[in-house]
Amino acid sequence: MYPPIEPFQTGLLDVGDGNHVYWEVCGNPTGKPAVVLHGGPGSGCTPGWRRFFDPAAYRVVLLDQRGCGRSTPHASEFGVDLSVNTTHHLIRDLEQLRDHLGIDRWLVFGGSWGATLGLAYAEAYPGVVSELVLFSVTNTTRREVEWITRDMGRVFPAEWARFRDGVPAERRDGSLVDAYAELLADPDPAVRAKAARDWCTWEDSHVAVHANHQPDPRYGDARFRMVFAKLVTHYWRHAAWLPDGQLMREATKLAGIPGVLVHGRLDVSGPPDIAWQLAQLWPDADLRLIDEAGHGTGDPGMAETVLAALDRFAKV
Image (cartoon, rainbow, N blue to C red; front, top):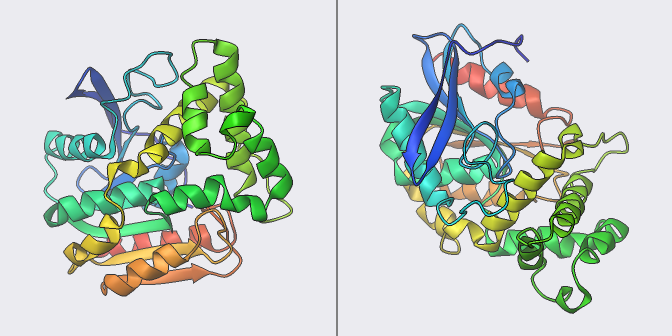
């Protein structure tokens, strides 16, 4: 990873609907533009994301997507309107930010949910995307949501049983993501707090494929747990507002855009078949399956491969 750096420019962009999106720019003011799309949804952009980029080569734009991080209003607050927080709103926000910063084309870098958003954005606006670097690739389809919230119980049975038992008994055979979303909107703050904790405990369980897995310290923060759980369930219960299979069907729109897809072969929460299928439909993509890695860049080989891809495109 490159050394830590600080942004040289920050702001809050009024994107409409009462929302203001936090953004920052770091690296070289005249460098190659790139935008970072964090995961979650709802995890926000942490300083570690800056360190993937050569600061002498890139002009790196980072943002906290609607409702999370330093953007306002914050979705952890009870009663915040989530109807104006959808994939289509986020895509529009990216275009507003690109225009605001005077950028013609930029490299799109994202992981997990950020990969879904990056694909949706690139397919909507292929002309403004110079390259794509995506890791832990997801499409946020209903099948993927069902896999994580129910089928993964076959891999982590005890942890999943605790997750399932976090909802009322009469809801346990139905959609668990719907049930949690409703608990997170309950008028009782204690109900909301327990649902957020139960959800985040499960999130931390299904990425633990190595014995030395360390829990994500952000889940120790009640405000982070709430915003993360609320936005993930909000997006997942609607399958990201994307028609089933759309990102795969429209992968032809990515033709001519160079890309690298980095995915852990041991990623059981986001199985590698999604990245593999995408690579079959997008001939300009270079698929890198990392044998010892699971979900995220903290596993062996992931960060190094992502860095190599970004270094490669820095020279283009």
